[in-house]
Length: 210
Image (cartoon, rainbow, N blue to C red; front, side, top):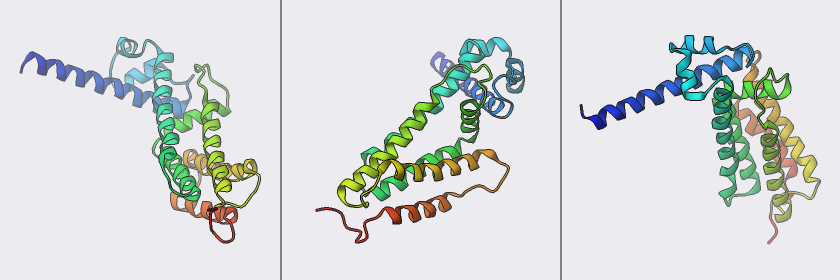
């Protein structure tokens, strides 16, 4: 094996160890809480020593912030992805909600942690601006609704109230995904509920302004 190959192998091992620490820490933070999950428990679960964790992340706070930055960046990607389509307001809304719903369903531990820290005591966790992501999601929904009203696709109405109708349904569906103590709202069910709401928003003739 050449020196180049050895270095590549070392980088792969290092990347794997780093990701394993992140995965284990997220699960422990989400299920035990930030304060209760100790560095000792994290490193013992991964099978490494504490200095290895400190090498990658500096300390427990650095590990937590790395998790927040990585997963919050994915939320931003999901929110931005709907902005570059030319489909109807109805389809854009359904697509945006679907992307966020799937993101929550596929990343339950992160959102469980996010909701716990946001709605409950901080447990000493470093500050993360979760409110901005709620605000971005709300603004994205409202913008599409306003564009739908302006084009004539949706009936004239209070876009703020209309936004809260959709947000309320989506928020409930998101919370059901992470609680784990009851039957969850399925993806298809949420889309059907959205159709019922959007049918009420739709212009009676279903036509847009010329």
